[in-house]
Image 1 (cartoon, rainbow, N blue to C red):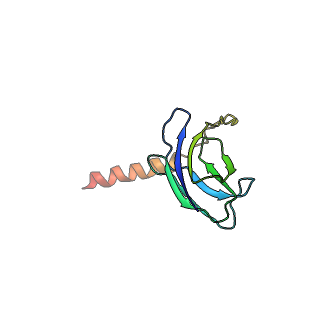
Image 2 (image 1 turned 90 degrees about the vertical axis):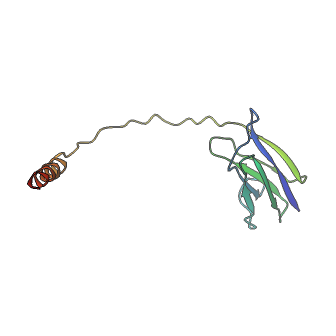
Image 3 (image 1 turned 180 degrees about the vertical axis):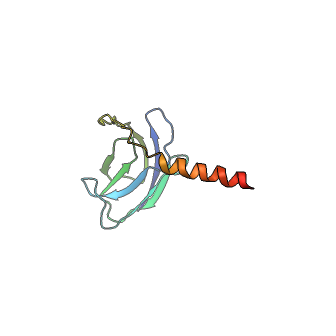
Length: 113
């Protein structure tokens, strides 16, 4: 069976490079390891083997998995709000001696010429 379709976000914008693959009911890749990614216009198409479920994954969007029930799909992915902890950047001690040494050597060698 060949399935195809289109993937967009909630505002109707086509999504590029969404992973679309055949999966089991829990969204795990099946033994067939069958899938594709969407093109610039959000279109996809591939041949399914196990005919179990289909999963859509894209960074920043919620994963969507459902049973295969037809051959054409129009998919709308919802944004996923990440609850990432804040990142603290600490400046480390910078050893200036090697930089200064090679800069002075470079300037002196230019003066000799």
